[in-house]
Amino acid sequence: MLEKLMAEAGRIGKPAWRPMLRYVAELHARSTHPPRKPFPFPWEEIGPGYCYGPAFGHWDIVHAVLDAIPSEPEHARFQLLNNLVLQQDDGLIPGSIWLGEEEPRWNDKAGHPSVWPVAVQDYVETTGDRTILATCFDALRRLIGWYEKNRSAEGEGFFYTDILNRSWESGVDEGVRFDLSPSGRLACVDATSHLYWLYKYAYRWSEQLGKEEPCYLQRAEELAAFIRESLYDERAGFFYDSWSVDRPETRAEAFEGIWPVVVGAASPEQANRTIDGYLLNGQKLFTAHPLATVAGSDPAFELRMWRGPAWNSMTYWAARGCIRYGRVDAAVRLLERALDASARQYEETGTIWEFYHPHGGSPLELKRKPHTEFNTPSRDYLGHNPLIAMARLWEAGGATLMRPGSENRQ
Image (cartoon, rainbow, N blue to C red):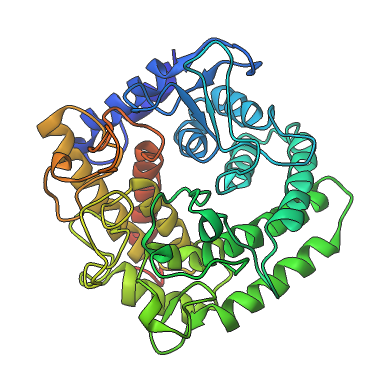
């Protein structure tokens, strides 16, 4: 099963990474199960070591798909379609489906960050298979309608319910941004950036399907202007939530501020300031194992889940953002440092961790959720570890930097 993925894992990246990458490929195979209710296709769980598993994650499956697309396109396609099968009549796509019991269960009131259209577009561009687009476009239109009805912020932008009830819809459980936040329908920098992306993909797919809908492009441009003008602090050179952008005493330098760069809503100047001032700054997010989820110089930083430790998925998204703005040099540095650190931990522990020590220490030194029975990172966790995709992107970036005449050549 997934033999082509295993073969690819054995030949890409640095030789020192390959034992880890082969193990990741094996985990993908071990995590894939035959079709069962509600999934019509073989489905991949978050990882066999996930403390609350087995589960299928709307946010997590995207990272698994990104690993698989070039070498296992059918597997990737199955996961993309499985992800949409439980879309509700109101348009919501559930965040996580728990499958440990006879009947699957999920939260029918909240989702997770909707980055799945990125994986759909990557699949289409890599394989040339456009047959999936009509299904995905219909699902995306309905999902956008759900966000517009249920997550529109006061004035402009979008929010996640973290600000209302600490339900962690953002995927960043117990995130530091909400320690001092008010309660209200206020624009969150991550939710607003994600919706910008959804509108952009909706417009793109409407064009590709021959039924162009300019309203989506217009809405994306409106959100981009709002992000650039209202969620960016010129003095700090970074993006923040609407309630803290002008109130430094209420905010933390959390990595969610990179999302406008990842999705392409930042201006080139804003993107480069974010990249140089935060992504490549060792006092901020460029730790021994990047990215720190909170700047190392921030008083809110701690060695606890989503409050300091590094998640490889976020390093991957940051690298894609850097490439979007022509900063291949930054992408290569981020990816290489994260892969080097992950490979060292694999050599020492023989597993892939849910999240990592930002200073390169043992993952067992980190806290997960002190108020629960699971207070260390999960082992054999794939949901936030697109390590094969990261190695692939590192190779492509390195080739670009070495190309004669490249403006990014070092």
